[in-house]
Length: 583
Ligand code: ASP
Image 1 (spheres, helix red, strand yellow):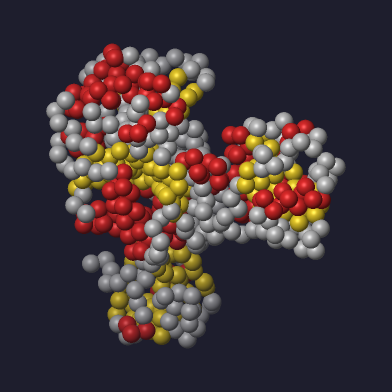
Image 2 (tube, protein in one colour; image 1 turned 90 degrees about the vertical axis):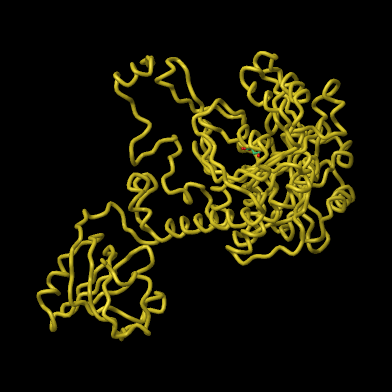
């Protein structure tokens, strides 16, 4: 055996034990007569001591060890005179009597400490060194624990994990496919799954009833902080269920994770808001409910005083920033600059300050009397000391901009604490989305989502009005999961494909296998998939999912460590019957 204990394990109660530890040298300090080494492994850090007086040879050897050398050290556990309460092993140290170098190390390109001096790219290039640091290590341990608890909960609910293939025919989740050429079928390609959607539905046809899988999905999209070309889902499907059953089951999963991992219990059922409601109140289909500041529509109230910005607006919306009436000119200018940013897109910002002394001041004093503004403030639900922020313009873009402003104010007022969690369900999504550019409808969720029974009639008359049996789970402004009750009747599925602009032949070519399956007794079914990386990063308090993935890609979809993607040999291309066009 290389070791008797780990580096995180020994305590005062182990005094006088003879132990052997293995690990990496985190740091060493040479104090003349004594040399101290912090030895690290996955479990923690233990201090080793070498004493010049008792063993000069060994002490000299210890002095020559560099950072990140891998060693085994044998010795006696003793009480430290200089205890370190910050370390779990800080009461003891090991008086080393034997040392063995298992491997040397180059000096690492950045410090392997909780706060590293390495920049992002450098740490990505040497990810295996970065993974030695506590912040990443803790995230991976958390990830493991969450996967474990997910399986445990779903197993207790009779779900079984079934693996689905990675080389498949395209699945439509609204992104581009990654494709893989087939050598044995020249000129033909597999797609990597954007999700196991069609397979999990086939498993329902096969009678498997309750399916789950923690599974890699692949989508060729432009990357952002919460996107990676490959990511992990907790993918689930159930038969003989209504939407209500799915929401209850998976609210149970989310609760189980919060309870078992964070010790957080939610007393109330998760709020359920319709898509229409969240857009009206928060301008966003994934609202952050850690704070209020709901929109107040002023369109009917604020017109007719000759202020063209408001008079010409299709929508006027306000939020009330509590206690901000004393915002300085500079702060208001900053907010104005903020809303004018291209990604926010408003033309300008109107404000009303409601002083604690009852006075009102506004950027539109010229057009409105104090009474007008007090009335508007009252409509907005403001009280003395509040600042009312107003945006005006076309409805949808203005609501989006107001949503950004709301989140910005939430940040400024410290209302978005990472330790607070506010989950909700958003329900009743529209089934379809019209795309002006291509002049056709797209499925808002995916083409297998069922319309609400009450709205099916609109398929022929007004498809944009149809609401879907589709739902998202949202926590703190992050969409952590989404799913739907599926269509399980062949005729309705055919009609849906038609509405989406597929000809019968195209639908048959792409989804013939699913349609055939529907002819053999498809049960009513539905499901959901949670973005596992997002869920873990939310639990970890990280802003980027990269920090909870062992080997992520960078923003240009590259693995900078392995330098991938990369060109392949001509020979390989030939085998695949592929010619690359050099630009
Ligand atoms: N396949 C869907 C997705 O990846 C989830 C679902 O409908 O279950 O978003």
